[in-house]
Length: 89
Image (cartoon, rainbow, N blue to C red):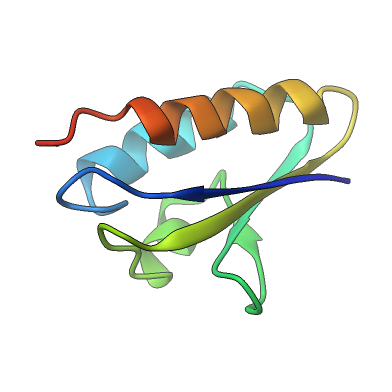
């Protein structure tokens, strides 16, 4: 399993539109992709409801993890996505 921590910087966190963008990107990978707050149970990152239940706001640190044939690419792309979200989004 590949894991990486990242901090959310855009003003709305992973709510509504950013969560949908994140989920759509996660769905592009064959690997199982997970999202979690440190020390908490991970949720399926390919599920909008799973992402929204985390209540991730600006400044939240999250762990993105993946397991499968393209796990490294999935984690790298999703970390890059979170780091490059428009700060106003």
